[in-house]
Image 1 (tube, rainbow, N blue to C red):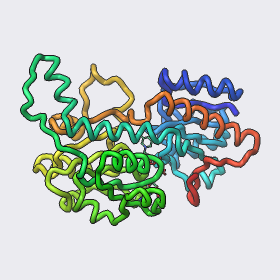
Image 2 (image 1 turned 180 degrees about the vertical axis):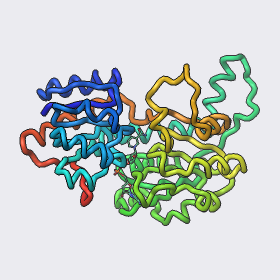
Image 3 (image 1 turned 30 degrees about the horizontal axis):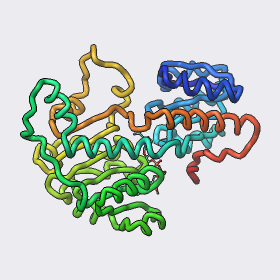
Image 4 (image 1 turned 180 degrees about the horizontal axis):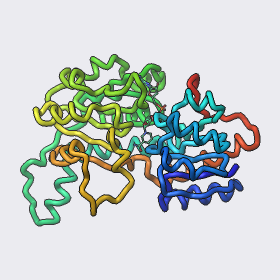
Length: 334
Ligand code: NAD
């Protein structure tokens, strides 16, 4: 199935290129993101392969359908950037990579927590300048503290297990409770209890209309003074302006982000020679207790191999008429 790959970076060419070649999938790589202006690149293809900041909204899908595109295959887990209803109307199948390496994102999440708590990001620069003062670098023992994990699916589950190993009291919230986690001693509760009792809160739900701005002025007001908040899931879970106010007031003691609600205009590009126009994002960068990575939590060799392999299988499945086990529909998400 001839596939147009959007938002291509050199590492995509390496990993996807190898997997597509092994599977005999004809393909072409495009650096451009998929959006209205670039959809025409998919003319003469049968499938498009997209990533987190590509746009497959109704308008784009209409155009793709006109070119005969039969498959939108996401090389990521989240699918909030695809209008599933429209895709179904047009008969376009949508697949994703539901789980590649939950460890990649979970371990990055823990990395953000440890860095913020023990101020690695500040210590790194101090020591390089021969400033060995410890002022401002004091952390806390995570052992014995309470962490709230919102979303205990593939990634949240691994986060729970790791933090349980740290000796933290782990509170979980999900629409489905995981019996294995309960056996480990993880306590399921409601979000309000998580907001009120946690010292650290970490987000692992997908972005849906229900989870949009889960962290907002009201929920922040319920949290302990000095809460550590981590979001490696999707930027839209957090109302960034409310978070900035909470950082200014001290309600949020530290903030770790791998995702940002307007990241589409920033992340994955080298903008170091440009003036970034997003004042909200730039304000976040001024806080010493904020650590931001540019959507790199997934970025391990293991994850890239698994993503490429599953994406190739997803394309092959449609080509040979096999059941699409990783399909995403309005009814069901694999
Ligand atoms: P998953 O589908 O395995 O788990 C998501 C969990 O959220 C499920 O258990 C689901 O029941 C729960 N959930 C859904 N709606 C909910 C709601 N309204 N309230 C409470 N819980 C709800 O997904 P995953 O693989 O664990 O990934 C989680 C998210 O992480 C993805 O949706 C994606 O947005 C993000 N992600 C980020 C990166 C990165 O590089 N930063 C990489 C992969 C995934």
